[in-house]
Length: 463
Ligand SMILES: [Fe+2]
Image (cartoon, rainbow, N blue to C red; front, side, top):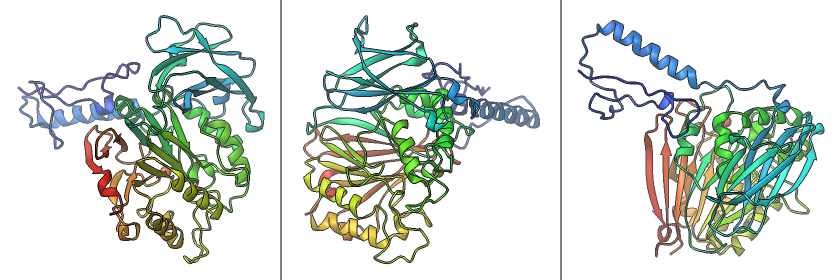
């Protein structure tokens, strides 16, 4: 008789399958196909389906988030979260309620003792409506491409398991590299969180989250902080961000209201709150504030652009006056691409190039064409685009690639914790090969790989 077994999660271990991804297995241990196992049961069909529905509903609801109270989130520590990481340094973010002292110790993975102490700086968060401090721990004198462990001690106490983490440092800038970057966007606390377990199990070396990291829908940092602290106290997200360097860019819902743009009132307050929330590399330029920045991982460079702070109104006429990045940020991007020696040059943003009908580069034709034309006229090779926002995930070659001079690949990863399919994408770069490659995998919340595709650098280059 075929047996249908639901594997239960302990709710603690990440290595075990989670309920929503619980394997429906046949009696001989084989996996059920996507359209279900063929049933040969002596149980009456009606009763069987009733039981199955109860099981599936129970499994679904058991992974529905049970977030801490929004208003009380600032009374509990949040983090640690690994931020910007180079070949020799890393930043760790932590929030603690008032009156809490912090000590961060670190050392190479596998050391019997973490003998080094991080340099600490803390900032009060009362302006953000949070009665506590945000901590920036600098871990210095690290070795490239090496795994480190760290532990956060509160008030000289023993470090709790949830306050310990690890990460891999970046290889030397410019060195050939083989690594995986995991992309997320669109996360709500009251949605199923199980895909974050799948994401963690995919073991990305780096995590880039591209907007709608929470849905506070306001430029008031006091509200934004409530949502962020709450989400960072969610078990699955907390496990991800303490286990790999995490870089972030906002989209509309974590910058301001839905589809908000450069005209959003209070955007300066959003930016002030955002820069305390994430330990990204330094953002903006001395004359152009914004959330944009760049970082490298070996010979792959990431230009993470801010598509909100200078965006023209979406409903404005789609002519040559309509901007997506603003002129100063666009110049920063093009100058950066000009000076980049990276084999792959990734432009990452919360917005899509084409798939969002009312809120992306699609309705900013001049800005889009100006970018595409610059790639062609400057002969920038290996440019690819990462986006979020869509609430589904895919990789494709833009239909206007002739304008670029080679296939412009866009990878969209969206809805890991707020969509029907709970999908996300990972990208493996291998620049150690004679013809470097980029392999995109799109995974659904069921665990199924929906798309897997490799592009060679020679194809993403001008002839
Ligand atoms: Fe979203």
